[in-house]
Length: 399
Image (cartoon, rainbow, N blue to C red; front, top):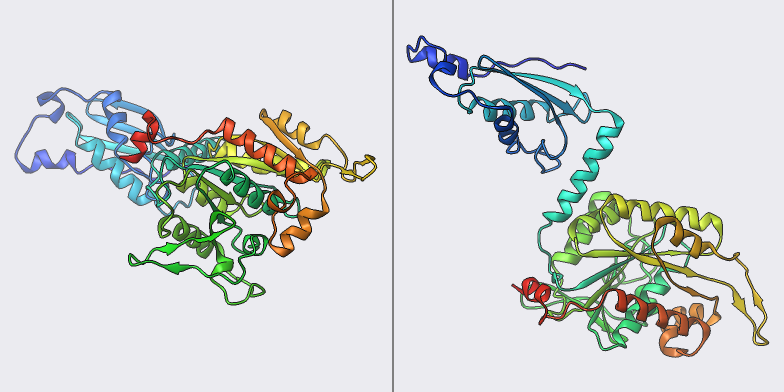
């Protein structure tokens, strides 16, 4: 567990110039705080955060010009070990009065690794490179722990309902493999194009701006067999190389189900993103949805609230049937400490409208699902009002 010891070049440099006294007698000795401060300039090559902030620096001992630094690596076989040790040695050896640097390496515990990853995610969000999505745009990631809970239908209808309030709204279909937004919006015959600046121009459909991999393929039945890196690159392109409107007030993201590469990439690249968790009333869906909420927390992404979909079916005579149980949405919201934004009942018009390209909030706005989804959209925009450009934050974001 203990690594090898290195001796700094510093102890030899004085002998080369014929200096017989110890350097520590010529200059004031560096303090532990100065050593720790110097180590903030040692950056982990993979996590792109300094090793002090990541919690990799342990005990620091200074005695008669010798500094002993303990460094905890994430794994014993860390391929970046040599570079980290070299950088530590160089930084510490440059301090006054240091003759020798002794580096003792160990391996982090599981608890320490978890803390490190949390700090790395926070740092990634804080230092995210700006994208083509304006910092004044409200980004809402509609997420679920599993497929089949109506996440995409909700994303499409929320986008249209928010646009109906007078806002400029974009919809990013980030479910790269399972894209469905083009069909739900009646846009299967449309294709993405590029402008003079070679930026992707979003397709306009049902009053919103749409970007989806489904608009890049000739046939919606074509399977996209992309692995993790390609998925992440596709998301990066949709955020960096799309000419989103400059006045985009809201960007709704239809997330893929689960907690994989796309979710982590979006959490890192869009620090202003906030999550809406979608579940159904049944306990199994609730428990799976809790995992995506946990991912949001660990990625430091705020959770706006929970939407319970398929929450019972009401017949024409007013009888109600809890086909998938009841109370799961409220229970999940209570467990993760957020608001239940609303419950959307089962409505046949949601499925039929999704197939024909007639979203329920447009085709049947007064129906049970249309009314409930519009109410959820209203609640979201009350919680997350648009960042007007005449506000302090809006002006800063526009700089």
